[in-house]
Image (cartoon, rainbow, N blue to C red; front, side):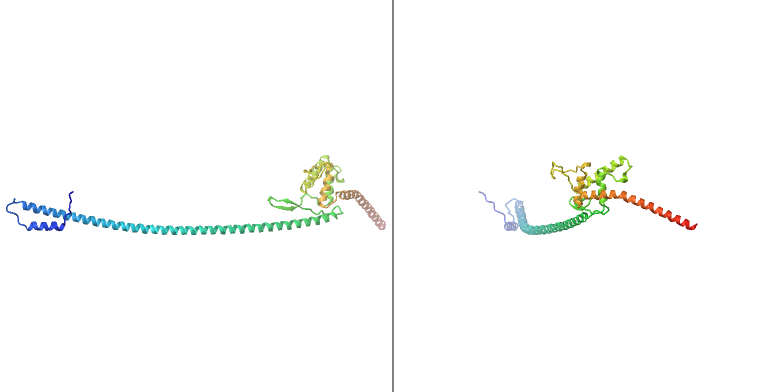
Length: 311
């Protein structure tokens, strides 16, 4: 095994100095001394060059090591800062999550409060509807009581209201039908026309006009019966079976009796009072005509007496 020792700059320099101070041999070739001196000098420069190279490489390695240490330290610092930053972000995220949860809880509370207010509003609406219904029912009871006391044909009928859906299907209102007769005479006339029985004033009118008036009266009674939920049952059906308003000329009295019963009136009494009123009208007209004739005779007698006095 051959060992290669590293050349020392100090030894090579000392050898070069010794060779330079040693005089050339007289026995040797004339240029041998120069060659040997140049060879030692070259080796000295080479040794210096290698030494400088080793020093440069050593410095380079040292700087690289320092840079690696700095890089490692910086990487550690950056990693530490990243960890801290990530930790802070995680804390912030956790805080935001807590805030979101809090907001959700607050939203839940607000929703509960809103639902509570809605329940209270519904309760108030229910109470308002109950008070409204009680008030309407009391008004209907008072109207029925007053209608039971009607005795004259021109006394106004007190309207009876029923609960009906409004334009908004979720709401109901108390309303009366607009075609309810205004007084007992109108009720009597409506029922009689529906049966084809007309007042004396209709004498001389055409059958077409009477038919139209009868159909109009039947339509009005049908609308009133449907509005007030009046059903007339035949002998072979129960009240639950009677679902439609089956109105004909022969069932007018039945529907009028059921309809007026809802209003607190008696159809038979209305018929009786109406017939008495119709019978009394010609007598009153005759009495009025007789009174007019006698008054005209008295006026003539008075004028004749005044003429005799003048003569």
